Image (cartoon, rainbow, N blue to C red; front, side):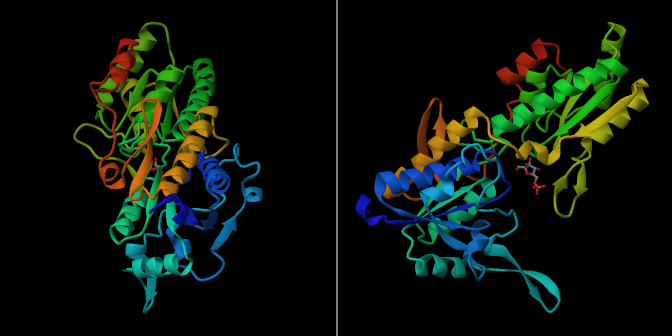
Length: 362
Ligand code: F6P
């Protein structure tokens, strides 16, 4: 398809929100309108906006994106439940999964869209890929605070989440020292420990627990005791929510819905039991997904958003924008999904942490 044929593009945000989503929306709208003379349509609440009846699709003008750059969240709304290929519906008083993909395809056609920009994580991009295989002209933009998407060196939102977690560790440090306590801080990171590792390094943690390196309670307690014996009677333990003990499992708040949470409490109980040290737990939770994006994330999100508009204008569909080294590039969405980028347990970042005396509880 030549540039001239792409006149109407839709855009949606899917999955968990993330600082920088609005900056992507702003950059795509500005580039699509000013550089390519396109009309851009925002779709509310991910793919669900193409299923639900009502006013879920509206034109995004420059006025809609004015002042958006520093704003957290997404003006389009999002959901991590509305997979059109397995959409929840009520049948005889029961919730069942139905395939609404045809509804989405028909709505896309009825709106006269030439392309769809999907800003999302592994789940939303997998859905986008399924639609691309059915002939929908799709462009992907990777998003997750966890930074665990392969095919891009960084995702926007991660830097802001690390900043938030680091600030929290700094604050816990002063109270830990005053009260001679072990402070456990639980951060996000379902399958990958990038936030825990980065914030732990930046905040000077004593122990970092990540899903990639199973921990032993005895090893964590040995570190806390060794510090006390050396005259430091306080410790900071940063635990990714997906961290798990050797020969044990991840801790869930709600196993059915796969909602992780509770490893911090578990580790704190272990420390108190085996070292006698007074311990407190802070669960940072969704604070890490909120707030104004850092300068790094604003720039990366703007580069991704502009690049997505350029891909759409060139008719390069089925591809996802990405960061490779210092450069913005694109890869087939098919190559970017289904395999996560986890922390290499023997990589340089982990080695640096070990060199600085940080324990991984192994
Ligand atoms: O994928 C990003 C993430 O923040 C994970 O780290 C976390 O497990 C999950 O989202 C939480 O999602 P929800 O908003 O459904 O609680």
